[in-house]
Image (cartoon, rainbow, N blue to C red; front, side, top):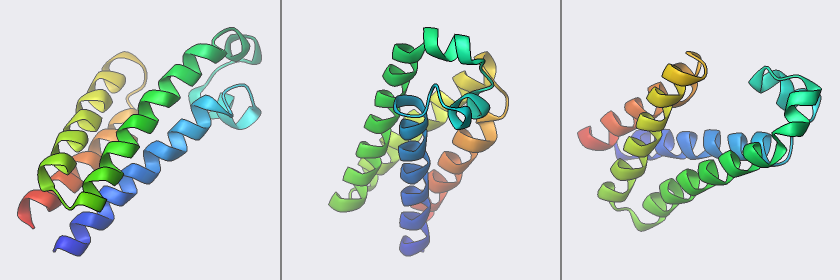
Length: 116
């Protein structure tokens, strides 16, 4: 079960690394605009905001990777909880889709870590 838990934690970390790339580097590209449902004009005007959001997603991924390397369940749980809370907030304020992309994987990974 530890392997399953760690795979799920790694998956959440990879999701957040991908979000980092979308927000920091692809924000104004067609791919980034499609992912966030923005226009070219809006994306250009909010480029630095997107990069800032991406940086925070990178910190979440780094914390999860740290937990995997260290093997400390407390670190994994803390960062998974941060991801879940951020996902709930994002779903309430930005897009309900975030609950499936961010919160659900984090909650499943957290459950697996706790069971393992």
